[in-house]
Image 1 (cartoon, helix red, strand yellow):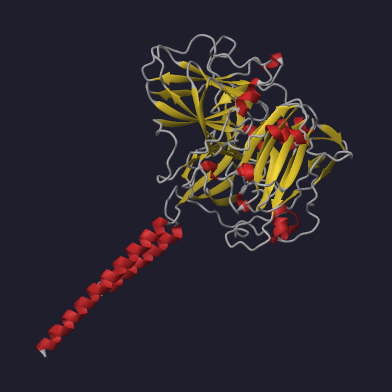
Image 2: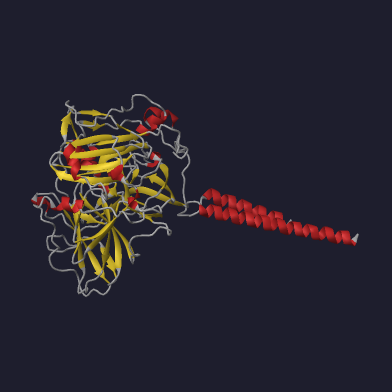
Length: 603
């Protein structure tokens, strides 16, 4: 009996021990599995009006969490990003993520064709993955001319550690927002534009939401300016975004070279520039080495381009580059801009920007492994824009003679619910011989087709065109009218892949894009005055086969237009307590398993 009792006790102890080992191993496997998945990060943002004086005059601007510009969204390739946005403005709001491709997830794009606006006082949670992307991007409010009041911020998408970067690790990473700026509110500006009155010269150029350093007596005293602090001998990555309304800006740093390394998610052939024309909506990364003797500080300058009015002379943005061993303030004349009368300077500069086809991308393969020059083109669209014109008594802008009319029901939602009459898939591939009209006509793209788009700018200002959902290849640009023979000048090997390209006045720019991202995507001018008046169109790319990876209608969809009856009152607010790298549900599961483990092992 004692032996039997002893054996029973030993067997029970051994069984408990084995059980504990099993549970521990199971939990460790679960933990390793959860961390092997792509991480989640959570952000809680409130968009509201804040008071600022960027040009020395108090005015209402749009801030994010009280910041103007807003916070930097700093993430890594393939991370899942969850941003809860509370709209504390007095009008509807959408944030769009300029350059983030939203792979198979157009629901998160944040433009009028994909999302109902977030009503004033409501919140909405964006959830998207920065899938297979790296580089420099930004976010901004996409409705109601609100970008003219701010609401923008940077997006940094870093490489995973396993993917090589084609340059050494910089000693610092600095984001700069450059923009034209008006003291009038965005509501006054949109009313002005809608009445057919042009924007005119801006009141100044901002750098990171701040006015100019007092480089001469013409600049009023007492204006706050941006100072960038650096150490001698070190190299910094500067991410520059033109988040302005309609003005191309030339960026330069006194006595320093700009080594271009990346633009909008593509590594470039590394070249030194003394200055760079950055057009509305464009983003660039430069490496800048602090190789001067620092007898004094240095000017950082953003000045208007392609303007010929004397009213623009005061509109120069100036910040200060301050070495830690500097002996005095910046002095002397500002570094010279390009010759305004050299019409080919900016175009030749743009042509010089090439794709680094040997660099690793966000995936473990070279950027140039996609041989875009060897793919047969499926569709050709020549997109022609003109200056504002009166259509049915209202000032409108057009592409191919059509001024886009945003329906009350977003295109993507109407497509999901098969609602007839909201839009037509009949956008013409060239300008038609008919009067201009206002319509909701969209491009019927061929899924996994290769589309050639030629932008022909018949306006007198530089236009920047942007396509959501994709990076496209910029293969050619020139002055004059594009013809079939123009293809002989195309760069079919290392044209840079990006999401925003400039089209000079009286000129054309050609792009190629592979339509492998299902959804409805916005093709627009980034110039806010032209966009507001209708210079945009949407491109539909429908996968004819069921794709389990294409994300469904989100549970938190806001309904509007003909589907307003589906919308319930928003009774619950979602709040996150900062960033996290482990999904909330996974944390709950782990906690439950651990409790079960201890309960089993010690009873």
